[in-house]
Length: 397
Image: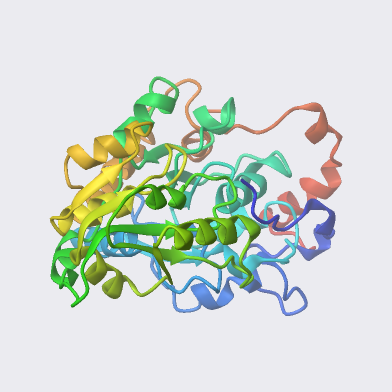
């Protein structure tokens, strides 16, 4: 799903605007300037290995609650290792314009050694990174990168799946087996919740509920299925995101709300995570009716951490595995992120024919996945290559 399209190729300026990854005053809408505030205090020296890591994610201004599991895992990871993490939100780049082809590559190369992309396949961040590290100009950026697959969409085919990312981090073993097995050389399951925090927040309210649904009402692809709560009996509460990022209630969301309320379900807007966990603790059952394409992973694990019974759909083997399997914590999450980077560091030390894009480009003994198709062959070399090469040789632009 491509929720918004960032940095269209039509906006590219000439090679005279080469930034070398720095913010130039007359290019205020460039990637380098839009992310300048995020990196202003980032002064981490390069050392051996992949010590400087950027996590690129998408959080719109209307979404106030961060990914608590990821945040706690990154805290644990950096505390236990010598790696440092820089957070970069793609939402701040909306309607930005790259100063030149390859600007994202140069911006990142100046500051980090590895890029973790937190995104579903073909969602905002994955689309953004693949376009501006690879597809628009066809170049092979010498920077290792990984994808933390935030969802269950099936992956694309070809190089985008098998080589563009140097590590793939699926959230569940079910997804790894269903879509990735034997299709990529480095697969590491990585996901977890703040289980200790969840247990501490599990303080029941005075009200009790037989069934609780937590999720989005306006999922336009129908993955969440909140209307399943209308088929149950007893005291029922549905709570979650009702309005879209623009503040409107979609027709689909309104139909779901109307059906739930007509059956006696109480419907509430989303609340803070702590208040939500108190509602979980006040419920006999948490209903997570998503189909396999929807989310629900965090809801299942957090309800389990509270000791509450979790009900999932019979047609969702992904959530069934999480209801019965290990309770993945942020400590596990941090350890798996480290395992993935250790695999990349090991790959950088040895040659492997046809290796992944970032590893091959950094190592300098592979094609780095440079595109040589007809489209990229038509792009003028003087626009895409000459300005960059002149600058790197120390010439003036």
